[in-house]
Amino acid sequence: MAYSRNYCRTLYAAVTKLLTLISMHSSEDPRDGGISDRWFVTNGVVAVGPISYELVLRGVAYGRIPAGSFVRHESWQVWRRLEDIEAQSAGNRRQIIA
Image 1 (cartoon, rainbow, N blue to C red):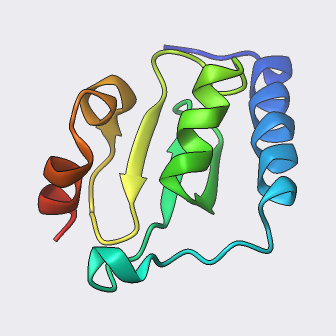
Image 2 (image 1 turned 45 degrees about the vertical axis):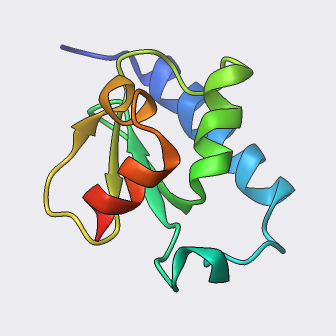
Image 3 (image 1 turned 180 degrees about the horizontal axis):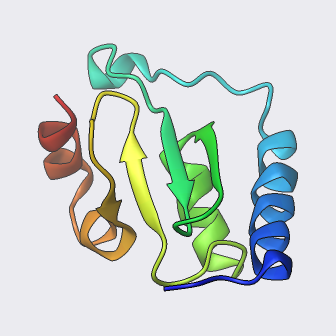
């Protein structure tokens, strides 16, 4: 799948804006047993992050992260479809991260 430069710039700009909104927030939640909350998002051309999963969800909700994007937790070696991760409960998501 090919993406235009404008599309890549738009995705990068949108996620960068979201990053600045929460730059003061911690990326680890002590309730998660110290599991980091650092995610990367890509459209297949441009990757941005690390960002919190909450920010990923907000980006999707506000249309800043397009459908069909891929995500990767910092501990993973492979990218996964965003919709596959979104479908997981918070508990299941923590299990697949660990």
